[in-house]
Image (tube, rainbow, N blue to C red; front, side):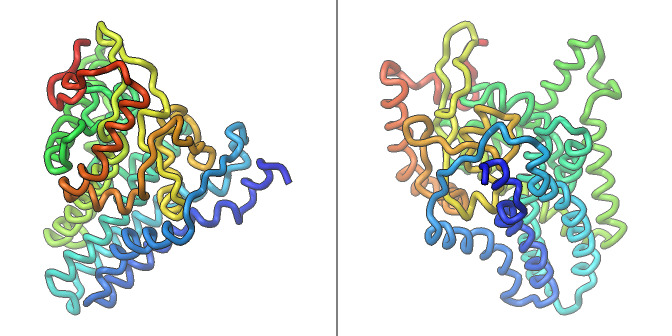
Length: 377
């Protein structure tokens, strides 16, 4: 059987559908209460960590020239998630806001678990969808982002992050020695500013003002208001609070991953505001099998930035010589990021080794470490 025929089989796509198990888990948490509210969190962070330890790494690569027709089961995976997440989030708002068997803490924890689901899976799937040429898929990505009130992520990711990754002009690239608790408020502020500025600049090049109807922020704001209105209609003010809890947790999950993906990695500044082309070495790579199933190969991030138009089943694994490797998958690394001394003890030596390997001629890294002042444009 050819590699293309192998990847086209439904059984090849089936492991990636493990993410769908989170939907019944959040419902079990809501209907049972008590310690069951921890189930979605434990499954996402700890079960897949254990599976990574058992199953190890997957370094095999699919044929990157596989046709889109052979990827239909993978494309169905991301598209079908959108209505299922929508139904789950808003049905749970209706149910939990009226659930007499849940106390206030249990309701909060149920929607903390929902946020783990919408952040780990929903935003990740929106990331896959926003990169596609198909307008329907891109709109489905917009719906997922509106469900967590982070719609500008699409503009920031496509227009800013991919262009400026590994430079001080990218808010999402975590600077060397920058702890997550400093990174997080900075990225919340700067990514919103940079995404709006990027869209405004695009409109200006077309001789249109920022408030033109073509500005996607009108769509972002409209969809987000619709989500908040629906939450209020189903659960009143309590429903809005529950919706905000899951949105906040989802955004936190996203930015934890963003922090891990490029920590301390920089592209060479060529002068006059120019940088070298993005290469696999400018993103941290992780080949851990189970967490890549959960995250639809997001941990093959080195190849995603090298070839952003590749669908997730075709992303290539890059070996040590070409891309820096994380010691563990994202579930472990994001937990470590929450403890900056631990994170720096694990990751700073790896960044320093990366610098010696790829940029032995650069002796002064101070300009590359600045979190606020960009290098000359």
